[in-house]
Structure formats: C-alpha cells, structure tokens
Amino acid sequence: MSSSLKQRHQAKKDEKEPSGDETQKIVSNEKKEQPPFRLMDLLGGVGGMIEFRLFQKVPGWVDASLPPGTTSELEMNLSNPQLWSILSGHSIVFSPNLVWFSVAMGLYVLAPYDYDQMRAEGMTMQWFVQRALLNTVVMLAYYGFWHTTLYGLGWAKRPFAQGRVYRWSKTIHNVWYCLLGVLQWTGWELIMVYLYANNRIGFQSNEDIFQNPMEMLKFFLAVITVPVFREIQFFFAHRTIHLRCLYKYIHALHHRNTDVEPFSGLCMSPAEHLYYISSIAPSVYWHASPFQFLWNGIHLVLSPGASHSGWEDHWHSDQFHVAHHRYFECNYGTPGFPLDIWFGTMRETMAPTTRVYKGVAEECVSRPDENPVIMARPDAKSTLLGIPAWDQMLYMAATAIGLPLFVIYNVNNPQVLPASLAAAVVSLGPLVLASLLSIITANPPIDSWEKLRVAMLYPFQKEPILGKFGLSLVLGTVLSIIPTYHFFESLFVEDPSDTIYNKIWASG
Image 1: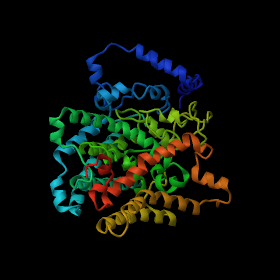
Image 2: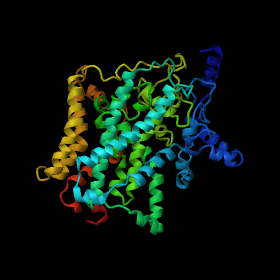
Image 3: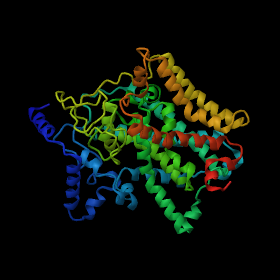
Image 4: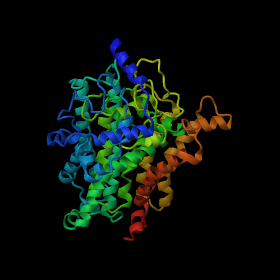
C-alpha cells in the first residue's frame, strides 16, 4: 500500500468517532441540507443502481480514497430504518429488493401454483422435481450473473479482500450447498401449496385482492413488510446459531468462506437452511396472498448472492455482511436496522480498528497496528474433498437425510406419532443434536461449570441471561423455531381445523 494511502487511512482512523447523540445530530443536519429534488437523480437509483451505473461505482457513503471495506458505516446505519421509505414502497423500488421482487412476480404469473392439481393429486415427486428444476435455473442464473461479471469478466475493480486466488474447488463446494438450499426451499414450497390447497392455511385469492380495496391494502402492506421482517428475523435467528453449542454443526459450514463470493451466500448446512427458511413465518399465521410466501422465499434464495459478492464497487454491494465473514462475531443483522448497534455487536468497518464494537469476541476487537488493507485468506475448508470427522458425518446424515425421511414417514403414517411430537422433532431435533455433539466432542473436555458455559454460550458467555442476551434468545426462538414447529405441525395434523392458522382465525 502506498504511503499516501496509509496516511489518509491513519487520518481517518485518528478521527474521534462521534457519540450516539453527536451522530444523531449529524444525521439530522444531513437531512436538513438535502439538495433540491431532481427526477434523474431519483431514477438513477432504481433497483439499487448508483447514478444509473451497475458496476465500478461505489455507494455514496463510501470513501473511495480508503482501502475497500474500511469506510465507517455507523452514520448510515443509525439513520435506518426510515419509516416513510418502507411505507411508501421506496425501500422496494430504490434498492436491490426491486430485482428480487420482479423475479418473484414473474414466477407468480408465469409459473403459478395449481391448487386444484395439488388437491387432486397430493404431494407428488413429479411436482417437486419440476419446481426444483425451475428454482435451480433461477438460482444459477442470478448467482451465475454475479459470479461471471465479477470473477470472470472483471466488471468491478475494488475487491474487499486483496490478493485473492480463485479456486474452482471452493466454487464447486459453494454451488453444491446452494443446490441443497434450493431443494429444501422447494420442499417448503411443496408443503405450503399442499397446506393452501387443503384449507390448512387460508389465503387471499387474486380476485379478492383486485375487487376489494381493503384486501389490496393488505396485499401492499404484506409486500412492503417482507424485507422488513426478513431483516429482523435474520438478526435474531443468525445471532442464535452463533452460540458455540450450535455454531459448529449448524453455521460453521457457511463460515468456511471468509473471503466471500456469490455462491457462498446460500452455502449453508441443511440444518441452517431449515431455520433460515423459517422466515416465511408470517404466511403460517396471517391471511395473505400466496405471493407473500413466494416473495419471501425468493428474497431468501436470491438476496445472499449479492450480499456475498466480495466486491465494493457495484450496485448491490454489502460491506456490512462481508465484515461479518471477516470477523465472525459481529454484524449479525443488516445495515437496514441498527440492531447490532443496540446489542453492541456492530463493527462499523472491515479495517483492523473499530470504535463501535462492544462485544467480547477476540476476533472482533481493535488491532490498530495491523495493515488497513484487507488481505484474502485461503479458505482451505471450502472444499468437498477429504473425509469429514465422524461427528460431522453423523450430524449431516441426520439432518440432510434423516430429517426429510422423517417428515415423509410422518405424512404417510400420521397415527404413529402425535403431530405435536413429530413437529417438535423437526424444529428442535437439529438444535438438541448439535448441542449434545458439541459437549461430547469439546476439546479440551468440559470439567467445570465455567467451561460448560463457555462451550455452550460463547461469545455471549459473559452476558447476563436477564438482559439483551436473554431477549435475543427469546426472539430467536419466537421468530425461527416456533414458526418451524407450527409449519410442520400444520402438515402433520390429521384434521385441517387443528392447524395453528385455523385455530387463530377459527375458519376450520
């Protein structure tokens, strides 16, 4: 790195980070000093574009004189969420959400769910295979676009990590787990369409929406709140699986990528896919259009491709989450909500120095003597080669093979296990198994309560249960585990009137 670049970064690093009150004043002043409205300026941001450009342009808040990823996001994060932007639909139209929304609407219109067929034929392998092929094509087209333009054609010039060495083995590894994620999403689709078709979950018809103004308003509110709910649910579910007792078997696979690329976005273990897709929760409880379910699902499947791009200078860049992959125990949420600030886990920059992070994780603390230029790591574990340890093979077999077979068995043999017990196995089983294996394989062995606490709760072991830590666990459970339970219980119950939806709405 040149001496002038070092000096500029040092000058930025030496600036006093504004306090919360000072930052709010800065944000307030910025709002007062906004330039006059210009239509072309507005249109230049449609779909997340940066002045009509898709590549080789950094977001407006980025200081391009600093190394990629080292601009502070604090002020930008504190200014969110903007209620007017959400309620007006601005946050859909002038962000990457517009791309994912358009894909969802295209699928809803061109490949609609056929409830009559599902009611007549039931859940069939033919339906699953056809839908899985469609979903796979959509995923590969979207992720392939980012991978090709960034890593093949070189349309961006500011990688977050310097010295990157491209490895096909890493890409193949990531594509494989992306495909598993698409297959699981297709399984959720199959079940949901079955629930819709058989009156286990009610929904708005297209006729209701277009003929009734109140139903149209409900539809609009559902559309604009999908990204909002996704961001909130993601923070608490994500933070929960960072508990050490869950991390090793559920989430560590995703973190094999410290230098991310598009396909690393959906590269997760099947157990993590389970809780990740539970973000479709509102559709389990609320009378809404099936489009809300599909829109939520497409958001789940496609959005990680952009946020894990690995580059700073394009229209869907996401420094916030890339910093999470660099430092692990920070930035559990998104820049759209300041949840990480409120919980003390925000790291405002990928630079070695942070003035905002308040957690205790050694990975995230300031290291002012390190080079501010972020260098790529080899990510040697991102490969399908080699034989996993016995405990990893056991967990993968139980969750990737055993759990789907368990669901199929209980659908075909509803008298064997009560629906509530079967749903509990699906929603809690992966968590219980991960915790038990973490204790059994702990190294060094657990021989004290303190070691047990660290083995189970790191990096939150020093936080009191009755506080932010306990609140995050409760909300993680409410927003991911309980919806998973109710989703599968709705499938397993013999009487459609016994589903949670029909109990809430008394429509069984």
